[in-house]
Length: 248
Image: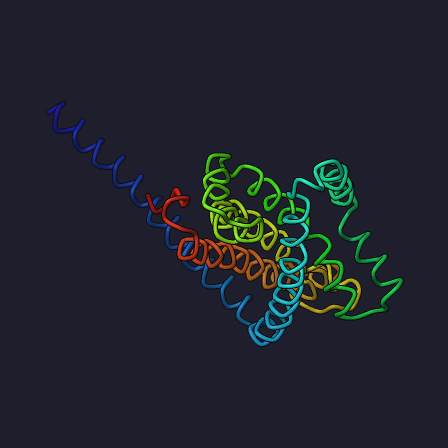
């Protein structure tokens, strides 16, 4: 009798436990549906503003890459060895300036709108690409350079055929970092009239509307992850097998 009573008590306890779990799960489902419905109200704004956001990131990112890689290459050349470290320190100092301050300065000279936003985002994205290009080229094994020189390659041929292919993985790591920073910084462009998803984020904060803020913040986070995965996929395809640790 005692054993039967003990088993019945145990079944009741398990029943209560699973009942609580089911109730919690149902409540979470209904809460998630309610949150999704609230966020769905901003779908048209999100679609429009994410286009502006991508445009700013794309333009500023391409300009930053086009400027930073040549700067990194130039600084890695032996003739600029004496000034390379000073230049890198100058760029490091530049990153200590808050991005909002850079955008404000850009607005002072270029006015309000997309142009100062792109300029500010470009400046904020430069350092990781310059630094990784410089480090990647300097870390190319010396014996590869000696072998290239031994078969009669010029400095330009050595750079294109030996140094850059061996530094590509490090360079792409800098590009991934820079674009992730760019995507996460782009919402600040709204403060100087640049548009983008920052409009929902900062308006939601100002109006104390958390769902409006989330409607802007969630796409920014998803876009940052998507950009990182996309650049990683491009690196996987372009970086030679011998220097790509992901393809060994």
